[in-house]
Each structure stands twice: as C-alpha cells, then as structure tokens.
Amino acid sequence: MTRRGLLLSGTALVAAAQTKAPAKAKGLSISLPGGKTVNTSQMVGGPCSVTIFKTTCPHCQKSLPIVEKVMKEFKAKGFRAIAVAVDENAEPLVAGFAKNYNITFPLGWAPIEDICKFMDLTPEQLYVPAMKIMDGTGKVRGRYPGGDAFFNMEEANLRNLIEMLLKEQRKA
Image (cartoon, rainbow, N blue to C red; front, side, top):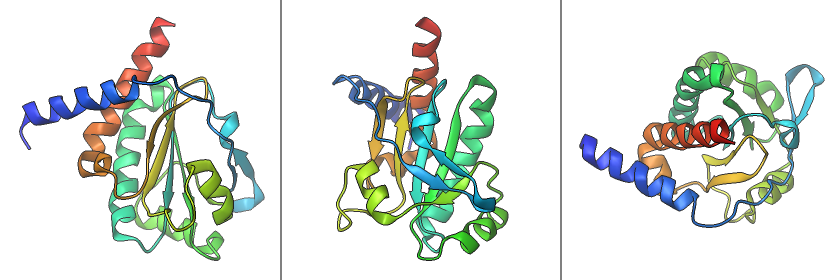
C-alpha cells in the first residue's frame, strides 16, 4: 500500500472513531501470572488497548508484537497495553508466549463469557485477535472484532488512533 493509502486509511479511522459519542468501557477482570488481577476499568489516565488472543493463533502471534512495538513507542506518553488469552488452561501458556514473542506488556486470561461481554460479542462471534481501545477516561474509542479490516494495516491504524487520542488528551 502506498503512503497516500496509509494516510487515507488513517483519516478514515479517525473519522470513524469520532462519528458517535464514546461509551464507557465495560470492565474486564484479568488474571495475571503470580496471582495478581487487574480490571480494565482501572486502566485510566492514557489510551489503553486490550487485545484478545489465543496463544496458538498465527494472526495473534503477528498481532501482539505489533502492539508491543507501538506500546514501546508511546509508553512514555501514557499508552498502555494488555492482552487476554482465551486458551483453556491459559495460565501456563501466557508466560511462554510472552517469552517467545518478546512481549513485555501484561498478558493474562479471563473466562470466555467475561471476554465476550467485554467485547460485546457472543461466543460464536468471538474470533481472534480482537481489540478494544479506550481513551484516558475509559471510554471505548475503537472496537475491532477478529477479522476486522483494522488488522489489515494494524500497526498504522493503531498508531494513528493512539496519536489522535493523545492529541485529544493534551487539548482537554
């Protein structure tokens, strides 16, 4: 894709994100290795992405390193990322996945029913990777079910959305 195509898709992404008033994200309780738990409703203050993945999914194995790259680029500006595995018995799998794919942001797991509620999907509709992006106030600014065109140019789309949210946050 040409640079012009990237810019046009970024412009379309921004326009789509601004078309309706964002709603507050539903909270999702995520279990982390070591017995810790985090709730997405606590992740306020800067843009945050929550990626739903499966450790054996080739698309997820490509997606999470992209999120890692963008997270490292914008971490100092307040962007955070977390990923939630849908694997059965995910606990022993997430640490190996993080090591194999050099993921430094938190990886955890949650019951599939809770993940589906968080993503506003039924279990039959859940396809991975899927992503939800919230702004610094916890409002949903992007919801991308698995197979969404967002993932065709994930790095550029994620970067454009995070830049837009950071600009909005500076203006507020």
